[in-house]
Image 1 (cartoon, rainbow, N blue to C red):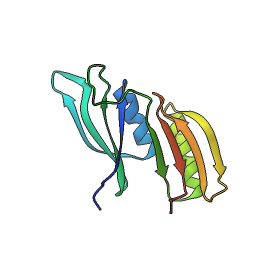
Image 2: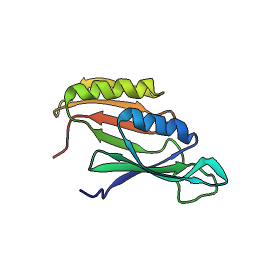
Image 3: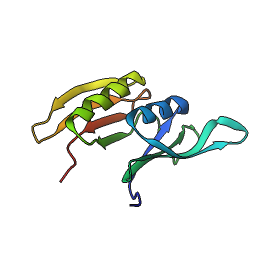
Image 4: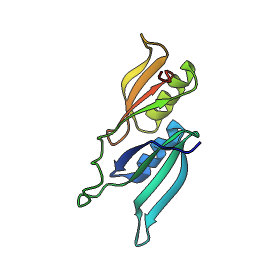
Length: 130
């Protein structure tokens, strides 16, 4: 399956952002760094299984096409209710902050919400949508 929808992020500390994404379970597809400044990521793609992903780069104040840090909201669907608790715990261990601890949802499934180290909001849930 080809990914057709990505969440777009920007990180001031891109290495910390990568660590957080890996803790959630994303895998690196591509990372393109500035050859003169390897700490700057020009573009990166991390995949979520075979059906989604995120694209991101280092935040630059002079780039009108990049969103500021801490402005994205993402919903990450996991396989089972127990996985919500596991992913939530890994996110906290990677520097995230809990906004909502794992809880059973009224509409089905289980869910939680964390902020990544730069303030992007990640909802983690077992509810796959309709």
